[in-house]
Length: 431
Image (tube, rainbow, N blue to C red):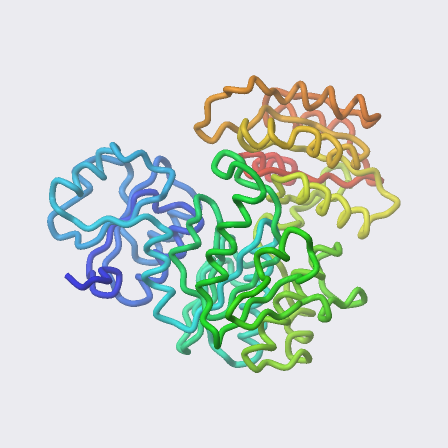
């Protein structure tokens, strides 16, 4: 088989097919006419959509899903290596790559625009897709969410250009070889892997050094966390700050989204797209799934759903809500994601969430972690109350829904935030 099995494999199996990134790759291979199968722990709207699009989705995860005709297995990085499908693939000698390795094998064949950063990369990636579409550049694209415009996380293009979201977790983005690298911002994140901010910066620096001398790195060149990453690179470094337009007409609120728009505009500019075209595209940009996504109303209160799971993201989402609705009471329903992140950023979480008028807190979403620090959602509630913002712990999503239903009025806005399963609160509130 070729040194790039993703280029030649006719039959590909995905372990964890329903993941937001994995499903985008499935769609890529289906578009190319490959035969694709996969499994997941449970069915979802995504797995049902993939089945409708031509993938064979196995209803359970077992060794018999791996058949001798499979030429490549792609597995989600969250999968344990003793998973029976992976054991079966090894016993049959089937090549295996994780999602990020597979993404690199696919994306590096294109003129690659990679969007990295601690926050905002999904929105910036989706903005760039819209800009290149309007400009007629017809990109292939993979984004870590569902575009509101299409309901998909994949775009099939016919040009040399590809746009992908580049995640820094476990240095996974180092599988990519970008021609244009966008760095939206850098903060201490993924605290279960990186030991400190300098460790995060070292990963971004390594990625930035992969950009060729004729390529471009787009960044805020004055941000203290970014400066050591972009100083002295071989590639041309372009500051996106001159493209920030505070008066820009975009549907997403907040300074952070105007900065995302500026980064996308700067990236488009270096490949020859005039800023006027970007402005036109951004005025029509309709957002992505779970990025300040309007869900409906409860008792006349507007309900929004947001993926924000880091204090900086919480603060930005709250600021955006305040910008849109300065006179409404802001009720936040929050579920912290992982014990390590909650423990390491505890004070920052309390201060960010206290900017709301009321906080309803769900138990911490463990994401398979053990609670070695002993941190609890109840202790975070206590810290928010100590700052002066009313906060209450609830044990279940249903309890959160009931509490919101009791207190929400047309004079309030409900913002559901978190990376776990808290999203179902927003859905239940607006059925």
